[in-house]
Image 1 (cartoon, rainbow, N blue to C red):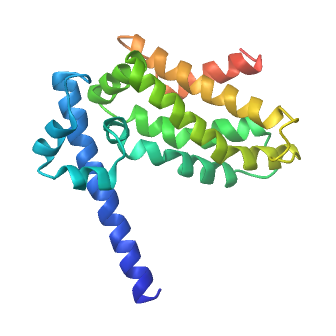
Image 2 (image 1 turned 90 degrees about the vertical axis):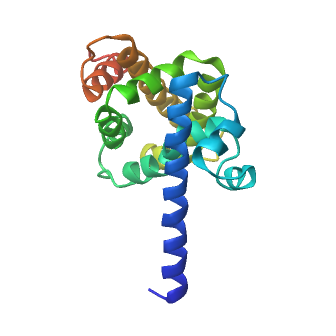
Length: 201
């Protein structure tokens, strides 16, 4: 690895560390004061950064709240591409989602409170859907490849249908997880949702 690559890697790690730190600050503030009452100025004060620094790392309060999960679409795409080539698209999607579900499920009650806030707050739910739309675009080439389809062919609905159904199952899973006082493990809930969507439950 060249010195330039090493330096770029160090800068990226520092950037991700800063994003994670600010995201935790935003989450703490929102859980304590509520989403609407938390401002960018509040975040900057609590994180001890300037507004210009905040906007260097995040485009909005919503993006900062989601933190590193906003970038999880790339990890999901890579996990999907790493699945065996002979795996059916629906099965590959389910298996690729396992690390994400395990990460969510490993969180404490704070994680569930944040997720509940997101699914029940209209602006955050809308941002969550926009994030899913970005994930959709990232995943479509790999799902299309597994279907033997052209991802640029808008007349073929299959790849879009698989991705939309799978991400819809994730949304249903998170809603169920945050609605139950003593929820089942997230992967189990997702299996139930995706099984129902596939007609196997």
